[in-house]
Image (cartoon, rainbow, N blue to C red; front, top):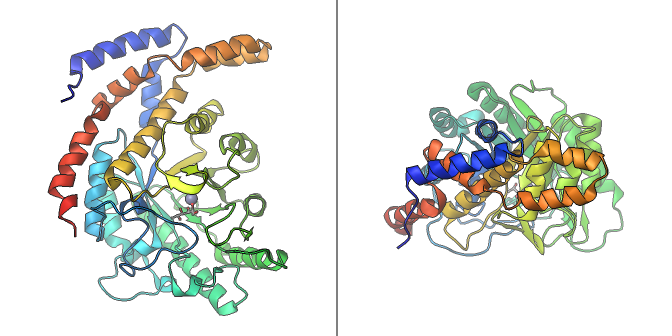
Length: 425
Ligand code: RNT
Ligand code: ZN
């Protein structure tokens, strides 16, 4: 049996850590108050393997895959909300929820995606309001009969294109509603799976079609205090390995030209390419961006976010660049091989831990070393910082915020598994 640190031990460790950081000119209290102001958007789809409630048991398509069959996946919106309530209680701070259109609650009636309305998300809005969560949104352009060809907004079939354009328009209006009612802008992110398995002859026309579809979707202006539009590109999807219509260059150009947010998903680039390096480049030309913090393993495999160098580099860039108010941080992974509530919690806590580590950097000193050309000193300090007692600051933050310190959150996950998840057939 593990024993846990007492509150006194946690506070004492913090007092020492705070002094140690103060010696480097870093104010830990300030770092914690900044951290408390950051809301990350948890992706609803980790709870049920991107299933949604539109057609239970339906196939997940669009070149994405959730592998594993760990018991306990949420089968209803109430179950999903219950799971999320536990997750939020294990994560320090106030955070958002990122919904997908297939999580609509239509009371058993079939409502086509192009006819979705805010009322189909009323229970989500009530829950979000009651719990202080902002909401973000995504049209769902996969797992649907009109997406079986692999093309949606870029389809050669005008009827198919129109259906998906109308769906995206309906989603922007739902996002606007979320933002208006909750008093915090909803980021509505468009990702489409469109592409070809094999080498196409015409790479141009589908991109023209996609551009036209996006223009039609975004034609109506919506107050950015309520809804912000984002577009998400990708390198390739399963079954669409040779050509992706919405590539990185396509959407970078589109976002800059049309003043919408660009969504950078960490699993959507060549394996040695990192999104951390892109942030300061794209924010020269865009007001705001959205991140899908994920972890690709060899491909866009959507593994649970760990405290990797990649993750740390992303958070460092956000903090070092002073971008906290211009970067919307969302998570995007779906692991069905482990306890899903734990998967959410581990990834979210890691995102926050990495953010805290970034907030604790002795940035002024590091910058001074760099500017003066003392790269030896820069390297030495960067390496030293990795061993500073940031975990004592994190533990104290968890204590302060009333969430489990350290691995203790797993006790709650295990208890919930026993009383709730294991009962799900
Ligand atoms: C897919 C994209 C997209 C999805 C969600 C479910 O490769 O990353 O963001 O993960 O829309
Ligand atoms: Zn994504």
